[in-house]
Structure formats: C-alpha cells, structure tokens
Image 1 (cartoon, rainbow, N blue to C red):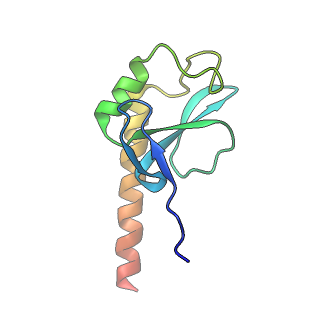
Image 2 (image 1 turned 180 degrees about the horizontal axis):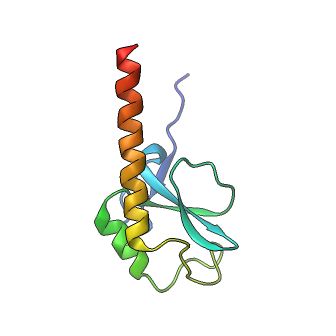
Length: 101
C-alpha cells in the first residue's frame, strides 16, 4: 500500500502542497517563529517558502484564535529571510557532500 503524502494549505495564498514543500510557523509563548525543520511542538500553520508569502504573513493583523492570542513574531522579517537562506545553503552543502562519498 502506498504511503499518503501529507498535504497542507498555505495560510497566505491558499496553495496546497506537500508538507515538505511548505514552511511551518509555530506559536510559542515567546511568539510566532519559523520551524525550518518541523521539530518544534505546538500549534502550527504553513506558508509557501517564497518571499511574497512570508512578507504577506508578516503584514497580517489577525491569525486563527487556536494558533495565537497575540500577533508577535520572535524574529524580524529580514532575520527570517536570512535564516531561510542559511538553511537552504546548509542543505545544498549537505547533499553535495553526500554525492562525494
């Protein structure tokens, strides 16, 4: 039997995609933060990994009540974009190093 792929919907634009292709955002007591590796426990929502959706997420004034009470991001928009860029670079270097083995 084939394993079903988990499909999620982008909170900003509504596009549906596999969970692995979207960026997870988690609500913590400190505020909303990106979960780049999907390891943080807590209520989450997903966005596309492009700059437009991330920027629109930061401009939203209201989130689902179950997600968070107050719209407060742990990192600034620029910090998140830098984190994502570093994570992508790290993944690329990892896969390149695997190909050398």
